[in-house]
Length: 379
Image 1: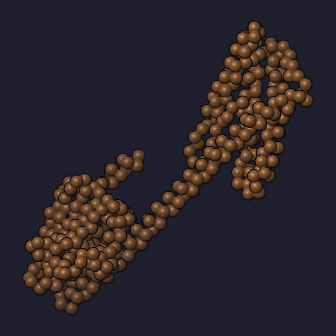
Image 2: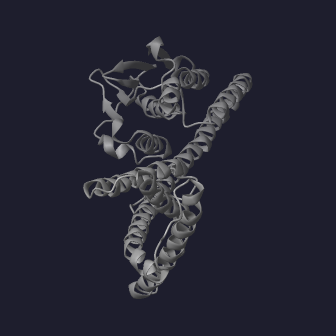
Image 3: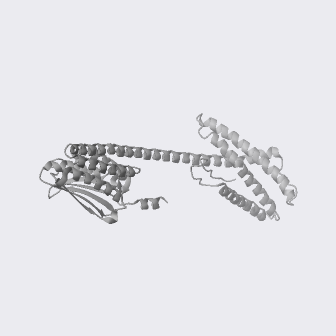
């Protein structure tokens, strides 16, 4: 009769076809079959058969459509049959015979009642003993097409579902790794800051007390930002400023801080707590020089569709150390490197180098994007 394409049963997957489309498809097939039969009648000089041919093909096509859900349900039972092709073929042969017998019976009964009801007189379907095997040849082809097409699309759906599940698992794994990196950094940051305050406690209790208050403000901002892996640059800079205020109380006149921030970048997203480890690293190595006050500068500008963050210091620089070896010296820098790789892949850059004028320069380059742009892209 014609072939129809089945649809996935899983409600979580989009259905490529609907039963409305099946109805239209079978109607079109019935009309094509009717046209062939009716034109053949006209070619043979048999006139006045339009209504009868229309009823014949209509009852034939729509009786198949009524049985199609049962055929697909039967096919679904043996979708994952593991007992061999011969046994599967035998089961489907039995299914095809049953389908043909029911289909033929429905056609015979429907025409028996519909033809007289619509004024076409009695319908003679012939001797049913011969009609059943005659219709079996056509129905066997139809049944085979239905089952093959159904198996194809069902296995395609299953393969796609497995790919989606694998991709989802990979994403969840990456998120778990990223979350682990973020959680790893927070106690590291807290421990180092408390250690700094502890060193001040024996020298100036009031200063240490003020630093503890500032640390509370800093932790509050950090916890607020910890709900997500990325935060606006303005929030990240506020955390950096609080941290540097703490360090200025610790080192007093030995630390001078400046900022060069493009204000249009305040809403740009950056990894949460990305500046503090860089600042801590610059202070730890910069103070080793012993050459007077250390100048520390934080800069942010846009360049070729990227946000460029820089931390520059006037300390002792890297010396003869290979910059690649620096990443293995502690939690902070290696943590940033790994988080950048997880978040942005090869669209990021993390460089540490000596400045020509002395000191070190850390440069981060990440994609330029905002939370508003992400929301628009997801709609």
